[in-house]
Image 1 (tube, rainbow, N blue to C red):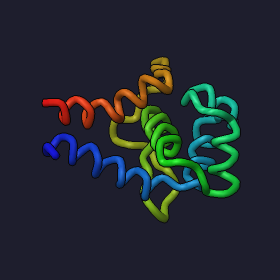
Image 2 (cartoon, rainbow, N blue to C red; image 1 turned 45 degrees about the horizontal axis):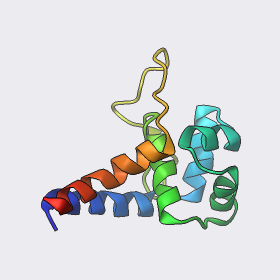
Image 3 (cartoon, one colour; image 1 turned 135 degrees about the vertical axis):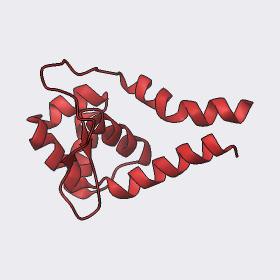
Image 4 (tube, one colour; image 1 turned 60 degrees about the horizontal axis):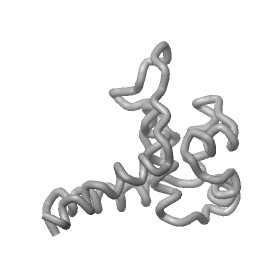
Length: 118
């Protein structure tokens, strides 16, 4: 496995362990988003967010999509702490980019797919 592919894999594993159900709910509140709004923004079903926040159980792909969508708003996640604003938090006078779920999946999986062919 190339170092880029390994780096992407390691990053995804870190996100999966750092982003909790509680983080998801807290991040939504910080952004002023409902479950429905987050579902629209991330391109996932509202039921997936309900499943994560109410039961802590959702597939890894959905957890990654939600974590990276919330991180795109400038939030960072660490185990045992509430979400915080990262150093590169977007300015609120600038409209947020609204990538589709497929775009996010492509970005997440693209580096591992692209490097495994080369």
